[in-house]
Length: 165
Image (tube, rainbow, N blue to C red; front, top):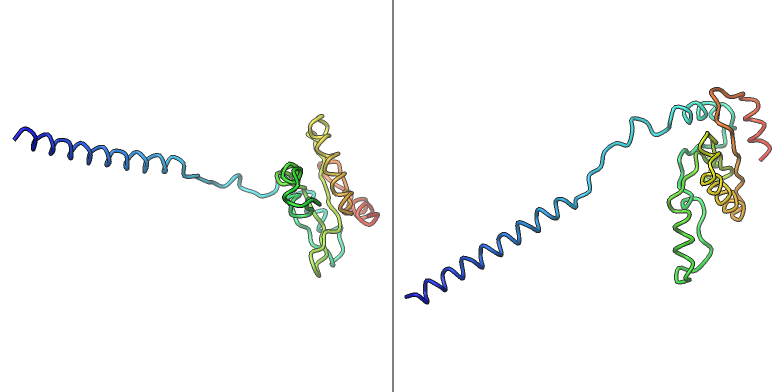
């Protein structure tokens, strides 16, 4: 009789342990679920929106303005993926974006990258980033126009800068 009670208690213990293990993993998985929320009410900052409105008036009708474009969507690493430098080079462009890209309406060919340079562009780290981005786009034959962020813009001046590219 003692042995049968022991066997029953052992089975109940095993079932309880398995149940607790399953519950624990379910709770753990729910804690790893990613939650997302709207980053902010607007895609563009107030300063970027002001500049975007000026850009709309400054470009020809054969161009589109694409805001906040990831650098890796415009250029790619010119190495085979099995090259030991491929992924480190890709990581340098995959997490960066540019403020605006002017593209041909007919086929979305990138014609000009526009960076709106605010106060952060004066820091050493941001300056190094700008040099890297400029060089990367230069290698890919895509010009980069840097425009100093302002409260207001002269449309004719922006038009002239864009046409010079």
